[in-house]
Length: 96
Picture 1: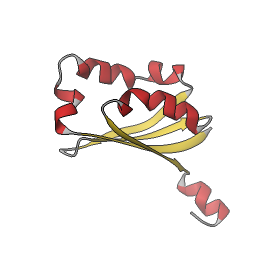
Picture 2: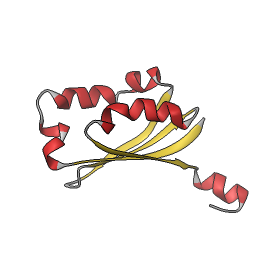
Picture 3: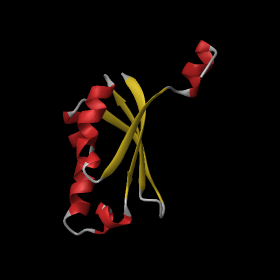
Picture 4: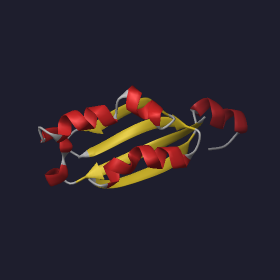
């Protein structure tokens, strides 16, 4: 499984957290059960306070699975998917 860091940014007007219909759907989309349907494991998630930015650390077989999992977020804003590794991995190979 490969590691990915994903950043999703949306406008204040498109913020799902304050929308009574979208908020439960947001939590469902980020659930372990939903992620597993896409072959994705959510290692960590955090929202930057006041920035309308969600950051995820995901594991998946490839970036296509991550793109498929993140597709609903693309409708609300931008999605950036970056391949990543653990510190242990970069130390073992001797470079970032």
